Length: 189
Image 1 (tube, one colour):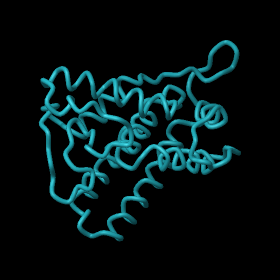
Image 2 (image 1 turned 90 degrees about the horizontal axis):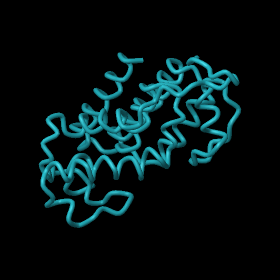
Image 3 (image 1 turned 180 degrees about the vertical axis):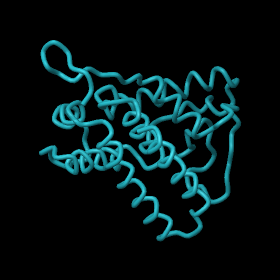
Image 4 (image 1 turned 45 degrees about the vertical axis):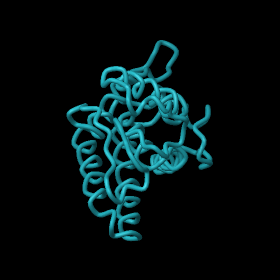
């Protein structure tokens, strides 16, 4: 478990901005900010991992902003629409926070909320799996062993990626990147 505060709560060692930066480097390793339109990507054009069909509103001007302005916009957008919604600051460690943000951007917030809840249950938490990160899930995450939770998340995410690719073999080119993310996180755990 993580270190504890004087009142017995697990102290947060999570840097939300670092979790966003880690995900951005996965999406655009050079942080080029180039707008990409990859054939076979159902999300349409992307920039810093934000797709045209993103689950939250994207300013239409984003696609033509100068790189630095677009990067600042992307960091704020990911923080508001992913980190805040998923209560990333309550994760038991940086590796878990990075995984949650990365997988949420890749697979969607509700799916990752369920994945986190199922993984917490794998670690012994008695919580409901409802796809919403509320006080109960945040409290369970704070109490979880970071390494054990990271492994549980990675196992479930790897199965998910294999299932998706099995349903649609055209996605194999994306699956390799998804699996690489999971392996990188496992090494950090």
